[in-house]
Structures are given as C-alpha cells and as structure tokens.
Length: 119
Image 1 (tube, helix red, strand yellow):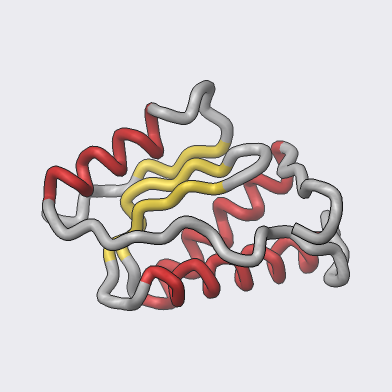
Image 2: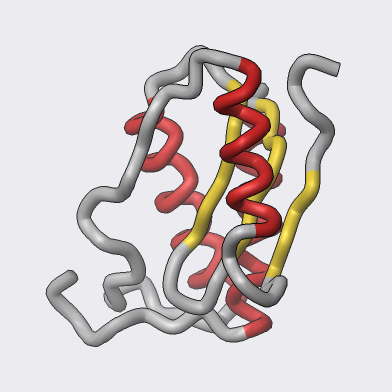
C-alpha cells in the first residue's frame, strides 16, 4: 500500500459486507462466507469467473459504497494492490475455506454466513 493502513471500523465493515453481498447478487455469484475484519476481508464465493476478476469487482464495488455512504473519500486508497486469490476445486477444500473464514479469524467482526453452494 502507498498510504497509511486503512482501518475498517464497525460502520465501514457493514458497508463493505453489504457491497460484497450486492456484488455477488448482481454478478450471479454464490457467496458462501464473508468475514470483514478491521484490516482485511475474507470471502468464499462460488463462480466460474476468475478469482482475480472477483477480487477487482468486490474491491471496486466496496470502495464506491464507502464513498457513497459518506464514510470515505474517493481519493483515499483503501485496498492493497492485489490480494490472495485461489481456486477451490474439491468440496472438502470449500468446507475448509468456509470454516477458516467463519471460525479461524478470531472474534467475529462483520460476518456473512451464506448457504453452501452444493446444497
């Protein structure tokens, strides 16, 4: 990052969570889990789109939502240049990822528990 660390307080986490859910609904993606922390975000999304495309769309939509909410300005960098993305090919990999996102992050901050994509 080129600016000071961006901190997601409770209000910002709620805006980002709603933006992620909206992005998934618009794109037809299946949001299985999301955990918006104070310094980063974890999501598990079922889609045929490339993970990098998902990351770009989520960051972009969340940034616009934060600006629209009045909590941020458009000129403030909010996210790192990239992020960790990976395909999950097996059902057990998806289970482990969902468990990690929902239960492996410490105390709950802003959590979204969606239905599992295979049910």
